Length: 176
Image (cartoon, rainbow, N blue to C red; front, top):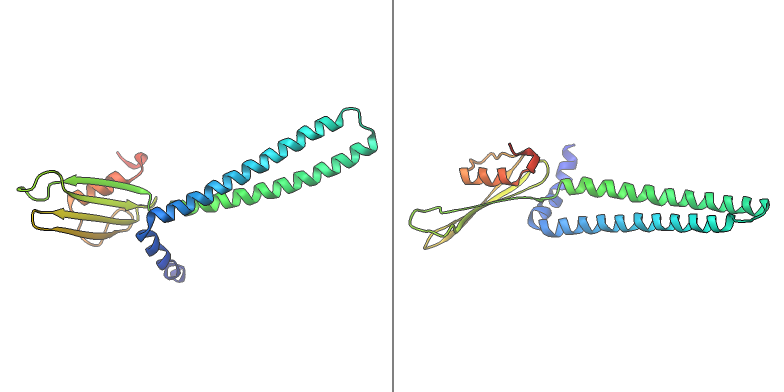
């Protein structure tokens, strides 16, 4: 299991750096899968219409050929559908690990600076793993901090604002 974690670190790092691109890639593959499944369903419907048209007034010999041909087409359709479902399951599993849960909390970090210019942004996957990024704005400078999040917590102390951003990033069903 540790070898898998080591092998996946560069991928996770890239996803953390490019969450939008990673999500876009997974969504694109997912959409292609849906299109292929839809095309396979449409092809099956066309075959059924063709069979219904051909069955009207046909002799027994040609009906046997038609049924054998139809059985071959159904087998091919099932294989295509199984491949599409397998790809869809893999895409769904991959999506659970993308940073797609976002929580943003804006606030005034310093009393003499208004306008809610400071922020904490949580980027989490479905397992509450990811990163929280905080930007503290003052009149003289802007400081940005990032803290890793594992299962909703961090080894580094989290501010109340960061905890609020993490809370807002969870699924609606997880909020109480």
